[in-house]
Image (cartoon, rainbow, N blue to C red; front, side):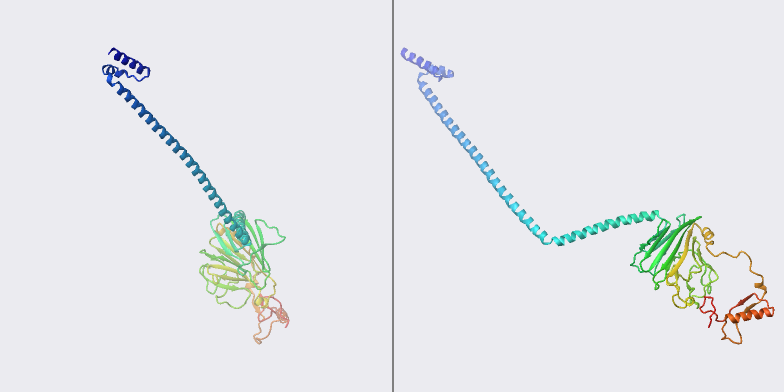
Amino acid sequence: MNNALGKNIQDDSDMKNGHLFDESEEETTLSTPTKSKGILKGWKNTLEDKNLNDGKDTDQCQSSTLASHLRKDSIALTSEKLGQILDIQKHYKKLHKQKRFGKQREILKKYQLQIGVAALFVMTVVIVSIGWHFHAIHKHERMISQRIFFEAEKRNLNLADPAKRDDIAGKLGLSLPIWQLPSHCNKETEEDEYQCLKWKGNAEFRIWYYTRDAIQCYNISWYFLNTHMLPKDCYQIGNAAWYGPSNVSNPTWTNHGINFTFSSSFTHQFDAGDYSLATENYWLSSRGVGIYVPGNIPLIVDWNKSKRGWICLISNYTGDFYGNKLTHAKHFLNYTICNGNDIKATHAYMRNLLPSPPIQLPDPSLFSDPLWSTADEENDEAKTTDKSIFQKVLLMRKHNLTCSSLVFDRTWQKLYGDFEFDPE
């Protein structure tokens, strides 16, 4: 028994030295020495289980490492394949791009002439549009700064009063072709107050601008080179009351609402009636507009007739007084138009354009002495000649007959209005 106890003690010492002794079970071991082998065996089983678990962990670690390597290899392989695919896509895109641009180059080469012409046309349109735009701006600025408001392309004329409250509008050169544009006259210096234009082969136009007290005026001249055209300018009558020569067969106070036509180139009576020849060709409106045509112009007046609401001035060097044929190679028209702040200011100036009035009364004998005529009652067909008139004058002096005036009756002129005796 002592031997057995000693052996157990020895085994216990050995277990401590082998680190297999569990102090928590020391008392049980001492009290039940028969279970020591089972404990050792249990520890052995525990070690085996631990080793088995360690093996499993090792296998799991190896499997995890392999899977990690496989994933890395797969990622690397996938990245490589993806890069190849992207390279292939880039290659095909490049080929497609080259093919597309190749077709475009072929199209450009095939249609380069048409494309060039189209581009040139577009550039021309753009340049012309820009040029026209700036030309319009320059023209507008020039019209603002200038004194003469005349649109040469449309031949429109405007004249305002100094106060800018009223203006009169006109359309000039109506017999000229609409499509023909004018050019500036050569060797003539133009200023703000003077302008000269010419329509090649047809007419020359000159206009002067000037001002007086409370009025503005234009003096206008036409010189027609084409003998088959007549100078014709028209102005709006408007709603103003106009004073001046008109139809005396049906006279009205002011010319508002009436219409007539008169020509000084013909001697017959017109359908519109007789024209008041005793007055000058001068018209004055209640708005302060005045128009004056000198008496030496063979004027045709068209008042509110062919162009409703307008007065038209026409110069015609044909007719009875010109032998029914052209005696002037070029038709000429000259007149002055003014616009004032009121009718009084306009008339105060324009009366200076009229012929000078008489400065004294006529000879009283014109009212007291008889008037004689060259008509021969016994011979109606007899012509009045310079010889027959001279004989009558000598006869009156011989008999001491007084005479206020002697009327040349019958036909005595070669042409009406030339005041020359007909030698035949």
